[in-house]
Amino acid sequence: MVKKINLSNPIHQFSVVLAINLIFFSVLYLCPTSNYNLHPPEGAYSGNILRGSDVGSYLYPARNFIEQGIFGQGDKPGYLRTIGYSAYEVVLITIFGESFFWVAYFIQAILAALVFATITAICNFFIKDDSRVSKTVFAFLCLGGAYWSYFYLLATDLFFAFFFIAGIYYGIKAVADKSWKKCIIHILLIGYAASVRPTLILYVIPELFILLCAAAHFKTLADKKIKVMIGVTCASVLLLTNLPSLRNYVNYGVMKPSNVFEINLHHFLAKETLILVNREDQYEREDAIASNIEKVNWGDACAFKKEAAFRTIREYPTEALIVLTKHLVKNLATPHYLRGTFVLLFKFKEPSNAAQITLDGTIHSVHDLKQAVGLPILVLSIIFICIYPLLWLLVIKHLVRMVQQKQYLYCLTIVLFFGYLIAPTLPCANGARSRLASEWLIVLLATVEFYYWRDKRKANRLKNKALRVDSMTRQESTY
Image (cartoon, rainbow, N blue to C red; front, side, top):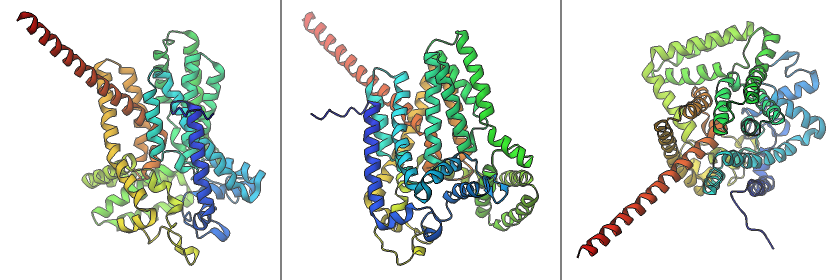
């Protein structure tokens, strides 16, 4: 007899998402156009839809390492990307050869399913007696395309989110169980996540507050072992999250994990601002200067780009605010499906050659988008565009309620967590993938507040009904 699926059970959630991923992957594999686009953009597949994407910037250093023993180009170490994902590709290429990416997709399909189970496990730390919350969070994330719709890309979006969220789980678990073993797992997971993406160089700040908040929740804050554990964890996390910076310092004397932030700040935020005031020529001059400086010292080029970008913001604050607002809306309120159907964009077309399978010059209007992804996906995306602002309103309402209840440490932890993960994404409008590391918490807090509001409203209705009945009873007894 087949057991009933329990959507609040992490194991059942894992099984459901993995089944979805495998079915979806089979469709992608069997469709000739999407199969072509699943391959890395090199050789016979160099013209596919992923050409010019981030995929190559991780794959080429991996191939260079296999040939030259260096993550970079030739005998020069790379500094654009941290090496965590490229190292993962090196292992797969070494073991599985040129079929490595099929194995990568299968592994990532498993990781995508594990993310959902991990999120539910985190929920269960704090909301053990209300399965409605874990079911709703799972259903919303799954239906919204979060995490699972990224598994078939050779990029860091899902990879970073998995190791980061799993690291948070083991950090909370270590404090709850007073376990050094789980603490070490937590440190290693966060450390590896930092090698996948360069965003965690100052993560020790929210890390400290997360551990303190967890200890306060489990009433272990006064325990000497927990105090030592938090201190050791923060020191270890500070070291591991800065290993990419140390690598670049050893190679180039530049204590930075990457130059991506400065590229986004200048190439997107500053450039888009200057375009609004018809000063794109200023950007072109600055970009040329930065390119020449980078040939000598990429750290100096980063400093120049940062100063040029901030100068543009100071000169044109209104236009810069418009650009930042646009990026904020796109990063926090766009659906995952438009990216999630990336390699299916041309599923209704039969391209005559590889050059036709590209986004360039193809998607110019809503009509083009509808033709590319199909009307159902477009409608579903619009629905989620309307829902995300409501989620954020619920999150804000939740924080206000917690402040009223004097839960100051909790509120500060949440604000630091969101601020740390969201603020660095604003220079560039990368869309839904920018919030993968934090989306689970957005949905969780919004869900908690929604059920609190609904239960309170229901209780008030019952109370008012009881009062009316009592009033009527008294009147009848008077007569």
